Length: 472
Image (cartoon, rainbow, N blue to C red; front, side, top):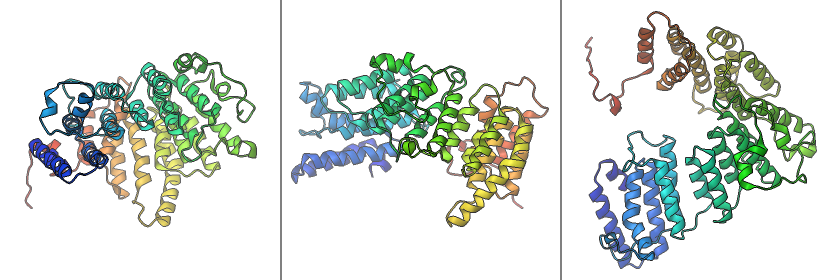
């Protein structure tokens, strides 16, 4: 009821509903902890429904007064609702922080606007500071949500140091993973690799969460600006902030080297390639099999993604990576082929040739095997993902005519082009560095838009478009 009312803009009804709920709980002497848990459920429902700012308003109205009372505030908001505000718990703050993180990553609906001119990052930072000042203890989930909001290395490092030294939050494997991913997103491979080495030294690697794929994921997030930078862990922001000497007495990796020695002086892709070789070597030695995992489909997909971010197109290396994956019985997953195709840059002719002779047969074989194994497997799921890779290359090459032909080819195979298909072309087109363009370029793009965009009466984005009824 709360979410439905929020979507209709009936905020007054929500306040009245919660006021009645509070009075009923008070009259039946419901324990304060149960009421706090109920409000956690209300906030979770609103945040999942994309109503983060209404969730924050409910928090400020019903939960914040108890904190301001504790701090001796005379704010009149304490008298607006009822005499016994809801007792705040860590989960209330965590739900809102996770909502701000999702909003910053644009997973929440795009209709959400910034509140009072403040970005989700600023709102989350102020809420976190208020949480600490109010003696509500943050936990590991709080830290991971806050790390997901950061985009620069210094704030990430400050948050890590403060949380572990002042707030006593332990560095669990999920926290390590969030730190490594955050540094990768901040385009800082040196700090990401230093934190992974920190994880190895403290024996916190997780087999179930596959920590090795986490560092590969961080390296894959390095964009073209940082793709050529060499990794130097001992000069990274993370190392300087911690200020500790690295002990030599910790588990050495295959080849009797530390992780820092393994990746220092290399670019992001070179480091990813060395990590892949080490993961393959570890399968030959029982001594390292517990420490280093065998590469899987995700490992190869992340390395291909790292390769695609290099400034120079490298289709030859992409083909070699594909053949290496086949030797290790890694399936031709659609996402893996998509990443490989993006490595061709604007070389659309070579990409199409590799698609016809090498990639497409592999995807079809894997697709048929998955369909026979799982009866509910969606038809063409991997094939569609692979097609999106070749359309991305067409966009990078500035060839909407080829992208349109690929969309027609998808239809012939019984695959429906969607807005994801169109977005794959547009993403590639943004990387187009070619000054020349073919004739009728705009017309081909318009035709591609028509093929990939289907009318949906529930799509509010097209409510203002003119519609024509054709009677046959």
